[in-house]
Length: 413
Image (tube, rainbow, N blue to C red; front, side):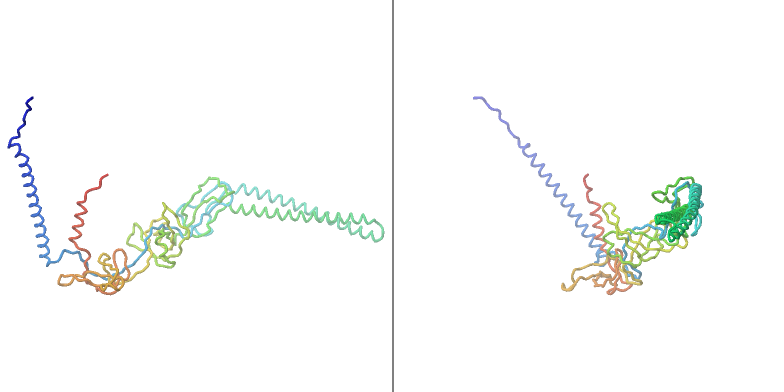
């Protein structure tokens, strides 16, 4: 029988794991004590802060003030000319000269441009010569018809004395009818040619392009020397716009368009003049919307005077359509309002309350009646007075929430 080796564990080796467990336990207890001390210190700090403030938690407050308030629907708009005309060429030809430049003030009937009249003048001359030819033919045919009539009358007189046959009389009558028809045909051709001459003269007049209205030249697509083709469409030579009255085209979302009413007050501000308002009244809502990136937008229009030429077309405007407004109203911040679906008795309808700071530093809840409100302020119809102090938020709670947000771990990407 073979002897097997025997492994013996010493007492020191057995005691080592037990010592490590004991050390970890001691360290854990120490950390618990440190955490308890820190928590106690925090409680003592907040209690001391509360005691120094008379037992009240730090709060953000604001006084009730009197002022103007409005509830408005906002939109982005663009300034357009209320009246503008694209002055085009009604005849084809080379643009011989343009008498104005962009920015020039023009009056109704003023000469703006001229198309080379030479080709049309030649057409007028040719049409007039053809008219003269037809009129000369008419004189000849009228003379021939007169002879035919005299011959027919003579043959009819001879028939009564049996000097000619009936066939001769019939032939004379037929020749008269043919001659009279030729005269009538030539007269119709002359009227047609006269109309042609008049049409050519009208085209000749179209070679001079006049302003149809008082206004300003805002665009000049065609340049001198270009050949204009007016066969299929009238090419634009210049655009005349009346800049004394502009129209604002505001893009309103489909969620807000139902709240707009024709005639409601509206105003807009400009990027360069955010503090200045330009007033108007809603004139029109276009029935056909524009869809941009699956967003449905309707155009709401209102007009504003521009006597000093301060406003320019295509300016961007921040537009406000006023639903409600009040002056010298008692105002509180919207953030101070507390909405409740039921009153304090649990039976009445929705109620609104605010927290008011008293003169002694304590707070109390007050029921208020709210009128006009927007995202920033609300009108108080009853329950508060000018000068009262309302609590907007708990500063300590706000700071704790901010700390939690700052200490939040960033997301993993």
